[in-house]
Image (cartoon, rainbow, N blue to C red; front, side, top):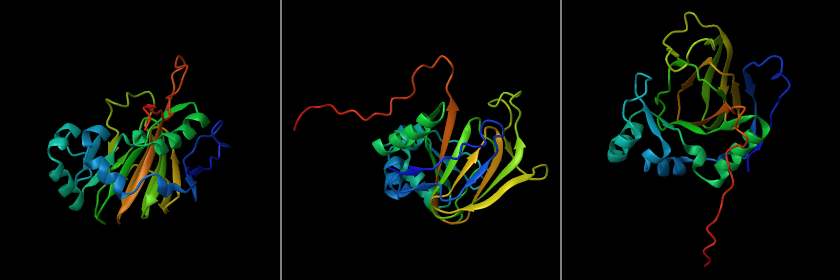
Length: 229
């Protein structure tokens, strides 16, 4: 099981983005290209998405990609970025990994995989996400920028444009190259940008606050059928 080190000292009074050097140990057991290949062969089950050469989400649903898997694999070999949205449900290891976050914080968490097979594989333009995000670098190196700018919570996140094309009005807070095992903490609605230039695997762990009426968290236990030998 990967060893995760959390620094909680600044969360109560001053939530800021953080660069987490050597954040997670034994991270390689979480995912490899073999697991990515398995997910790509079941795109509907894992919510597969593609990032096109213009850094935008390709408008092919996982249901369509299920019928066009050869197209999916060709895109990855030709420089498209790949997103796996439902990887937290992949195995007992991923469930136990998420349980650490859900036991440490008052959240429900998930694992999204971002990867590219080629040096020119794309990622999204400058954007923000609704929940707090942890980023963990798994393979390769990737430059990341986190900006001081945040989208106001007065706006409806899903009906407001959360992607910007230019840095003209942005102010950089963190500019760092993540190596395997390094991480980032990105607060909710804070703008950020990944700039991969080599083959890479990164995972994002979005953490959604649990509503007050939610008495239990996700059951991350791995159960067996007990059907005998």
